[in-house]
Length: 248
Image (tube, rainbow, N blue to C red; front, side):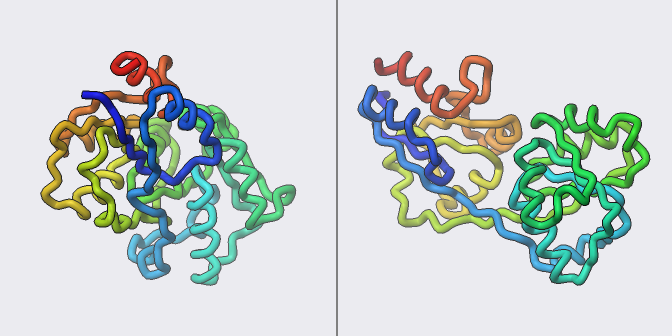
C-alpha cells in the first residue's frame, strides 16, 4: 500500500526541514496533532501520594515541565526548599532550565548526558548518601531510572508531578491516514478514548522509544517501523527509510 497521509502524534516541531523534504521527495502529506497534553497535578493530587518533599536531600529531573510543576506545587503548598537541596538532571539543558526557578550559582546542580546510567555515574560514591526524590509523570517515562537507582543501592522514591490529559481528536478523520506515529502509552490511551471501536485496518504504525513497544503489544497493534535505531535515530529518518524502500 502506498503511503499518502501520515499523522504524527506530537506538536509541529521547530525544525520542519526533514519533514518538508519527505513531502517534496515522496509526495506524502504529513500532519502533526498532539494526542495528549501534559498538565501539572493539583496540590490535592500530590498530597494524595503522601510524599513529603522536605524528607529528601536531592531531587531528580528529566524534563522541563516537571521542573515547572515541582516548583509551582511547592509554592502552592508553602514548601520552602532548603539551600542545601541538591538537583540531579538527566541533561545539561534540563539543568540549565532550573535557572527559571532558582539562583543557579547558589545551588548544587549536577547533570548526566541523557541516560539513567550517566546520572548514576555522576552520583558516584560522593552523593550516594543522599535521599533522592525522582520527579516523574504518570506515563511511567522514568520507570527505568527508578529501577536503576534502586538496583544501585540508592535511597530513592518517585513521585508524579505531571499527568497526561487526552486531547479531543473526534474531529480528526483518523481513518484517512495511512500511517500514524506514536510515542508512548498516553498516545494509545487518547486514541482509544476518542475512538473506542478503533480498527487499524491497513493503517501502519511507527513507534519512537522503547516504552511504547509493550503498550502496542497490549493493544494488539503491529509496529511497522520502530525507532530510534542506529540506522534511524529520528522519526524523520525512520519515515525516510520506509518511503525509500516502499515507494521510491
